[in-house]
Length: 113
Length: 115
Image (cartoon, rainbow over all chains, first blue to last red; front, top):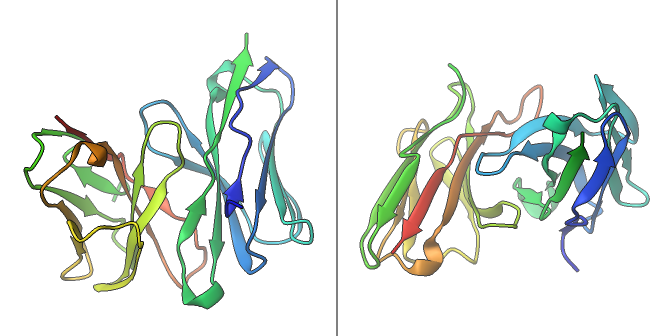
């Protein structure tokens, strides 16, 4: 089992729709959860982070965390073609004293104009 | 300070040559991470530093790879005797720990092509 799992996609949504991106993780000691956006050929850009169970909203983005289910998601409302990118889920665990960020393989999102 | 800076942005080298990359983190960040990313994959952890101390190395990191952060500021990643399989984007990230947040911010990356 991979430590952080994401569906590679592509996930295609029409412009203006809600895009829902999902991520599961295996380490119950994980404490911090991050979503990065990565355009082709570019480096990852942090867009959201969440530490507590529940929802966290920032503009068109909402991160959702359920530690009991080991599940984190990202909702993008009113999707725009400029949102087309790969979305990386990252998890940080302090289990065993390690502080590294562990990434999933990313979900490719296509927003269709 | 505008963020994490990496140099060079692109590097083409012949197989067997040594290469060195540099990363300048955000100035107040004491943690510095190196990752490697290949096409279609997420960033793969290589190593990280807290100040000048290298605290963890991935077991995937062969002895051809070495990283330093001598004064707790910038870091270098050296690859000796490069192989074609080393072709990838090398990403550096930094964060402040402990602190108000634990988010890591990435530099632009160094794209290595071994021919």
